[in-house]
Length: 148
Image (cartoon, rainbow, N blue to C red):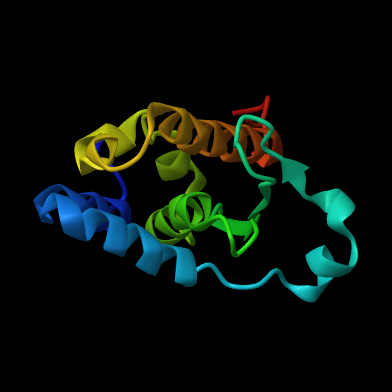
């Protein structure tokens, strides 16, 4: 299954960018991560930590009644790489249908050429963020109606 269109666009931008501009693009995505809504900022227990990340990184997902996924991330401003990953995922997956989010392959980012500018350890962190948010989406997805 292909990536959701917004994520395809992000992947294409990185893949076609010169190596030196990939880092700049990652930093731009880091600045796009919005602050947490008050309900999460006031009660951080609803956020799940992604322990595989080198820096403290927390996330929450919500699936609305239409099956659209909404993403919430919290990472320190002094961790621009991991914030950049969050920005990429938010840009590419926010508001997408849960089935499309769940179909994103765990290593989609290899197509972006980030391996030339980011350490393998940090890339594994990106994969862990995606895995964690997909698990949360699966957990929130309703089970099929037994009568259908």
